[in-house]
Amino acid sequence: MEKREKAAIASSNNQRFKIGRREYTGVDKRTYQLDKKIPSGKACMKTCAVRVVRDRPSLMDIYRIEHWLSGKGFYQKSAVPSADRARLLAEYHLQYSEELRRYYNSEESLWELFLEKFPDKIAEERISSYGELLYRAKYRR
Image (cartoon, rainbow, N blue to C red):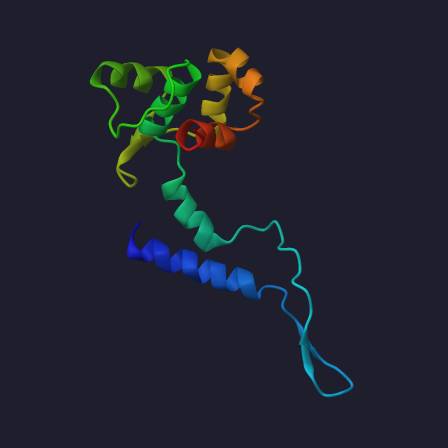
């Protein structure tokens, strides 16, 4: 993680902590803090900018998901096998971004493709979104 990303995340966390912390002064001249308000659903631009780079579905993520859904277990390595690379690029309509320096596609289109290809496994695992699918394929052992 770059220093710029860490600074953005720390700033966002600091702002999120301060949201809704209103103070009031009681009759006895003491200052009290009210409970924190529930954060709004409005997106924070700093967090969104970091997420666009970090969580954009990539070729490696797609290979890990496909490997897990096909019943082969978790893929621990850091590179996609060259034999599967061309097939994945064509099958999942991945485009190369010079800005991100990796192949990517939108979460919605990938979710639809995975639902078409592995409907039984997704239903069996009770997965309801692309984010949950990525989490299971990457981290849940």
